[in-house]
Each structure stands twice: as structure tokens, then as C-alpha cells.
Length: 83
Image (cartoon, rainbow, N blue to C red; front, side):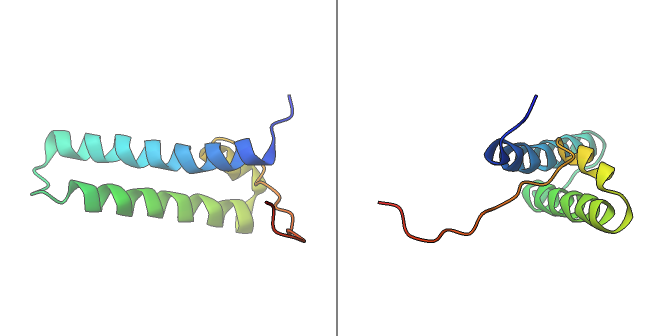
């Protein structure tokens, strides 16, 4: 099954958000986060995404599966504005 580049970008955005949420919920279950859960969730999500992208780029492209889809989407340059 071939997945479109747009679908890849959606999946590779949603998966890190879900992972960050799950990790933060796990932390919240055992630790009082003193109202910083949103900040911690954002930081965990960003660190997860950056870490996986670094592994994918510098180590092996197969680490992309940790973002839901192994292949990064390919973007085309727009030549003119759409109306």
C-alpha cells in the first residue's frame, strides 16, 4: 500500500503527540506535576520527535517507524499560488 506524502506528514505529526501524551499521563500517575503537565507534555513530545528524527537521519532511516511511517514525506516546491 502506498501512502501519500500528505498522509505521511499527518501520521508523523500525530504519533509523537500521542507518545508525548502517554508518557506524560504515565508520569502524572506517579508524580504530582504541580500544574506543569502541559509544559512537560510539550517538552516530551518535542524531545521524542527530535530524537527520532536524529536517529532516522544520522543512524538509520528505519528509525522513522517510531514516528509511524518509515519514510519522510517529500515536498514539492510550489511554482505559483493556487486560487
